[in-house]
Structure formats: structure tokens, C-alpha cells
Amino acid sequence: MSDVVLEASGLAKRYGRRTWALEGIDLAIERGGITALVGPNAAGKSTLIKTWIGFERPTRGAVRVAGIDPWRKRSEALEHVGYVPQSPSLYDALTVDDHLELALMLRPTFDRAYARQRLDQLGIPIDQRARSLSGGQQAQVALALALGTRAEILLLDEPLASLDPLARREFLHVLTDAVRADNATALLSSHIVTDVEQACDRLMVLGVGRLLLHESVADALAGHAIGTDGVAPPGAVATFAGPAGERLTLVRRAGSAGGDGLRPATLEEVVLGYLSSGRSTAAVGERAA
Amino acid sequence: MRAFSRWARLSFRLQRWEVLASIAGVALHAGLALWFAWQLRGIAAGEPACPDPNAYVPGCEALSQRFRGLADWATGLLYLSWGAPFAMGLLLGVPIVSREIESGTAATAWTLSRSRIRWLLGRVAFAAAVLVMLLAVVTVVSGVLAVAIMPNLHLERDFTWIGRRDWLIVGRGLAALGLGVLIGAALGRLLPGLLAAAFASVVVFAGLSLAMDRWNETLTVVVDPSGLPDAAPESSGALHVGQRIELPSGELVSWSDTALVGDVQVIDERGRLYTAFDDETGMPDPTTFVGWDRALVVPGDRYPQVVARDCAVTIGVGLLALGGGMAVIRRRRPA
Image 1: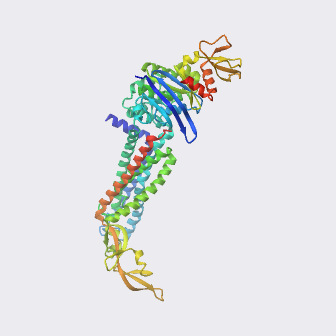
Image 2: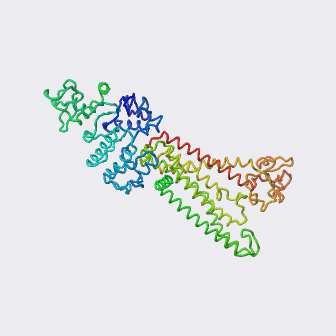
Image 3: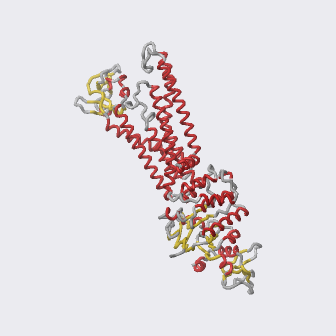
């Protein structure tokens, strides 16, 4: 039996007549761990996640959640999925406790005690209305609602975007803790690479609707190096500007970096390199496959 | 029981402004209606020598004038009874989906719930229950008020104020609710949804009213209006559907058909129609007998039947609209 829980094959999504949000996405995410889905704005991260929860219908290709087509069998697919939307989508008029009750009403298998315990640990006032909570607390409530479903797959659509660094760290701590405890699979989309570096096991880089890189964080770090002399060595992925304006070259290579004018790449540099190479997707597509 | 109370409590909190506004409106309406009814009954019962304050009885002019002055205001409340189901149905129906989409909570609700249809039905059931309870109050107090304004009114055998004091109020409210859900789901925005739903309601209910008028024609009987008080078919409690001319051959023709016979038609006090030609003085000169004036009416005893089928059709339209709303949200993006 396959252990793949999230799949996309030949996935393409077009809005209107001309705008392609996703093109030719092929990927498979296996059970367990947290995968970071990284890319700039309008890269198609939200669209990809929304096809997996049946909010968007693929224009071409197919997606599967736990082996189920979420567009055709949305109810069945949603049994396997907990979702945290981009902005905490809570009801202003309801208290935190009301949200847990609502979740229980909508999904009889919702584990209210588990969600409540998570919120209690964070000291989130359960009787307070959602609108009076801070952004970080609202995000935690949204995460608790997703975790309370006890779903094997968690899809998180940029939940960190509006949070301050402390709230982001706390959110990620709760997420990693829950994923490990439940042996769940999480896909966390973000454009803040430094935050996901600590929390995620795998990395997917999405640029202009195409998958540019998909491998473990460890492999991404070990398999890439940075050239700083401005010369493109063999295996160069792309050249991009560093923080001080210097020219950096991301190099794909086997073995550890060093000796030949290369230094180890940070995860952010790996991501920046692939995003810079986004236009030459054909070559990268082979790597992703 | 616990699940029911949770559903009721949370549903109320999600729509509390609309529900509270509806309750306040109905409480005000009911309070005023009962006050007017009490006042009118007090006036009518105040003078045993004047049993019918609506009738002209010598010596009762002052009482009648006082009664009618108040009755005019009270009749205005019956117009509110006509408008209440549309206003409340749309107010409760449009936000169910549109507000969720506008505020982004649809994404949460539609992923927590395995079925969007079940989610929608849960929300609509609460709004429908509130609507039925409140409009039932409107219906009952409007009936009380109608009888106070017109003491001889038989609520079950008289078409007077049809749709303003009977269960059509509830039926129309449910239809407006369904229409509100559909338009709110399609537009996904609250204020434009309310405006569009109000416009759609005017169109749908005008069309429905025309259709029901045509259907009611199948229940009509022909009566001689000259034998009725004030020659008015409505005075017998019947529903006046149209006016016809009965030719000596027994054939019924419309008034426009009789225009082919002559320029001017004159009806005498016995309901006989003549064609007439102007003489030199400009006065009509009856010359040719054409036929008798006749009214097409639905008799008052058919009132429950007419209301029941009008209710059924109206609720059917509401259910169709709700079905449309379900179809929309099955495929709709949550934002």
C-alpha cells in the first residue's frame, strides 16, 4: 500500500482565460512530517492547497488526498484533512469555546478536549470573543480547530504571514509538537523561509505556478553550495543578488561544499536560487521529478 | 437535547442581529396591532345601538367617524403584515452564506463540516424556525386586527385582505428566505446581496402573483353584481377576478369585445348593458341592448383552498431557490 497522502499529477489550474496559477505540477508527499511549501506571492501556493481541499477544481490533471479525489468526493476527502486558512477565519461574535462547540456540531468526531487542552496550554482565554484576541491567538485557535479534527493531513495556508516573530515561533512549536505526537502529515505554505527551516522536514519551492524543488530540508542543504566569486561553476542553478548586492551563485553538487571557492548554502539561499531560476523550469522540473 | 440546544444557541449567535431586529419588528407590530384592535373593539362595543360601526346608521355617525379614523391607521398595519415576510425572509436569508464568504469564515465552516449541504441546511433550519415563529405571530395578530377593523369579517370565508392576515404571510416569508439564500450564495456579499435579493423578490413575487391570478380563474363563478351590496362582488367576501358581459345567448364576453358594438356602453341600475350613441346634447342615448353585467368571482368559501394552494406554490418556489443555493455552494469558492 502506498504511503503517499498528498498527490498531484499533471496538475494545472487556470483562472479566467489566460492566467495559469499552476502548470504541470507532479508531486507526491508521503506520510509523516512537515513539508514547507515556499514561494513568492502569486506563486500558486494557496491554489495548490485549495485544490487539495476541494475549493478549486483542477483545469487539467488530478489531485488526491489520501487517495481520494477531493473535487469529486469532497466529503470523504475532508475526513482526512484539517485546514488552517490564510487569515484566521474565526467568527467575531463567538467565543473561543463557541468555536470548539461549533466544530463539534459540524464534525461529530471533533476532539474538543484535545483542542481545548492545546489552547489551555497556550493560556488562550476560552471565554473571550474571537475578535478580542491578538493575531497570534487567533492563529492558534485556527490551528486548534484543525488539530481537533485529528485529521491525518494538515494543510496550512500561510498562517504565519500576519504574525509577529514570537507568535510565529509559538505557532510552529505547537504545530511540530502536534504533528509528531499524532504522526500526522502537514503542508505549511509560507514565504518566510527562516521560520520554516527549523520546523519542516521537507521543502517544496513553487515559482510562477511551477514546482522548482521538492526534497528534504537536509538534502537541500547538503546538496547545494554558494559560489561567491561571480563565476558560474558546473551545476550552477542560478545567480542572484546577496544581501549586500554581491552576486551569489547557487550550485547543485554532490558531497559537501568547500575547497573550490564554494561555501555551504543556507536554506534561504537555496530557495532564492531556485526562485531566480524559475524561468528555466524545464531543467529544474527534471530535478524535482 | 444537548445537541439541539447547542445548535440553537450557536445559530442564534451567528445571526443574532437579524434575529433580534426581526423580533423587535414583530413585537412592535404585534403591540400596535393589539392596541388598535383593543381600541377599535372598545369603540364598537361602546354603543349597543350601533352594532356595525362600518355601516351607515342614522345616529351613529359620530361613533362611525371615530371608528373609521382609527381603522384607517390600523389598516396601514395590515400593509406592514404584507411586507413583513419579504423583509424578514431576506434579512434572515441573505446573510447565511454571503456573510460567511465575505468574512472568510466559510473556509473554516466548509472544511470542518464534511458536507456543505448539511451545513447550509443546519443554518437555514434555524432561520426558517425563527421566521415561522415570528410570522405566525404576525399572522395571528393581523387576523385579530382584521376582525377588529371589520367586525363582520369571517376569517375563513372572506378574501378581504388576503395575504395580509393569513398563512400566506408565513409561506411568503419562507420563499423570501430561500431566495435570499440563493442570491446571497451567488453574490457572496451581504449588502449587494440584500439589494439584489430585494429586486429579485419584486420580480419573482409579481410573476407569482400573476400566475396565481390566472390559476384562481379556474375557480371562478359568474355572479350578478347588481344583486350585491354596493354592486361590489367583494362585499360578499368573494375574490373579484374580472368583469364580463353575458350576452342574451348566454355567452360571456369581455368589455373590450363590447366596444366593437358601439362607442359608449351604459349599464342601468339592473345591470343591463346598452350600446349608446351621443345625441346633439352630448348625453348618452341608450339604443341597443347588449347583455348583462357580470362579475367573475371566487366565492368566499373557497378562501382556504386558494390560500393553501398559494402557500404551497410559494413555498415550492422558496424550496426551488434553496435548491439553487445548494447547487451554488457545492461549487463555490469560500472566498
